[in-house]
Length: 475
Image (cartoon, rainbow, N blue to C red; front, side):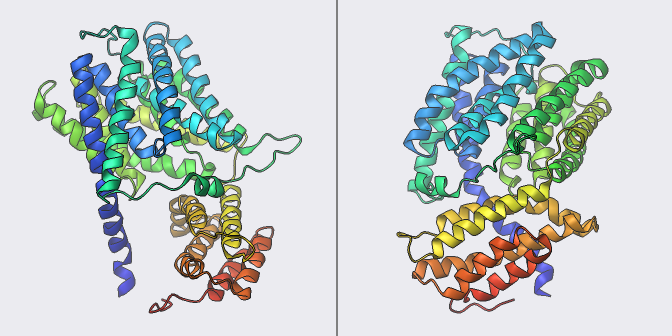
């Protein structure tokens, strides 16, 4: 009977845990929005302020002094470049499409060159999504700032508000403390060396992103007229954070389901909200807040509420949310189909290979934390690496529930087995204990990564070798 309530209780706990971060992100977005409207009134600056604030709040790129300095230097430049790409998409669509594709694919390709390059890649990608939300909006500004300075100033405002409210939230203990840079570096996944004739996984993912975006631009302009951004945005979303072809397929299904619900909700809300005024703005902000809050529970919630917000925003700008719902859904379906086809056919990256790489990183971090020769020891690198493993769980668990091929069902068991090691391993590390049985079990699990048929048994043996914290029972 207890298991029947396990998933709802876990979901409620995750929602409660995510609420403070969602509130802080929304307040930062509102403050950045207010400043943007004072300096450069208009929907374009509003969208840029909100999207940058929410993206920065979620990405955690500015949680230390170095991160804030990098963001302060890079964001204005990238924001200016993204604005230029938006103008090209409006005035010279194919040139703009080429520039957008190259910029986003480059941000993915950079991830393989270490932590600093990964951070730069994420910073580069942040502003580009804004040009897909309302690319047809006029770039004209009616405020005191010259138009060329608007993206620079808004990027700095978003960074300042997110950083200030994050610091306040941590001081009030509403938000978790930032992970020390040393722990982030220790937990960062190691890129496997590419073979002689095959590019690295990150390079393949960058090429997949480029092909998917190119196909989406072509399909969007050829078949969907002014709704082309929905095709491109969907292809971009399903390949963002690409963790292998199964993950892309799973994310595409969530995107479709969420977008269908969001489009229907937007069509129902469009008439009472109107195209102008406080009601439409309030509904857009409510949708943004709910999507930000519920995203950690399941990506489908973000897809639903983000679709509501974007559809209402475009309704505000003159693209009716109700009358063109079917065409919008068809555009989203086309973008998802392009994304899945590219993930399967263009230099495919197997999700099981990504998972085994992350399992290797987590086991290596656990082995270091249990090694008596390494001081000081900390559980943080293992926790960070295990979080990266857990990110892959939803797609594999869905495959297990659906009874798909065994090579996709068993990896969900690997994830569950390693996750069960977390609490006893952390308790052991914090006590400073390092029993030989546990260290040997870690070594056996690492060797079993080369033989997947032995891996589940090795991970279960590792769990058995870790003594339970006082007062806990195996269940």
